[in-house]
Length: 135
Image 1 (cartoon, helix red, strand yellow):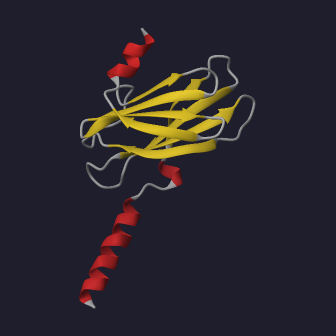
Image 2 (cartoon, rainbow, N blue to C red):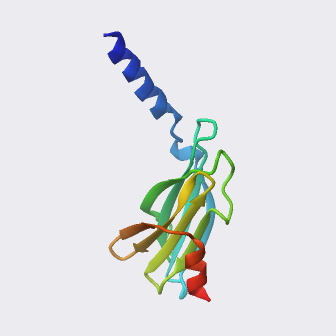
């Protein structure tokens, strides 16, 4: 019985460390090439020391106040804050983006998102490959 209470205490304690909606702030917004929509990135610090930053991605159609949730993920950056070096977004036309997440304690993650059907694919590869493809 002691084991079960201990495990439950750990589970509920970890859940309490997750950031609440009020803890998220807008990090950046990225308008599409023709301005029909904007991708918005919100971030929140994990309540655990040196925990990962929580990242939420939204898409907002032009002229709308609605933020449509696309993805929630994490960036493990050794307890440091998030900067432009950790999150990069590149538009691939008007309805697709590449999102690259990098941190000191994780492999770079490149996520391609189709904003029309909210399908995405995730690959582990260096973010600099995304930047090289631009040039």
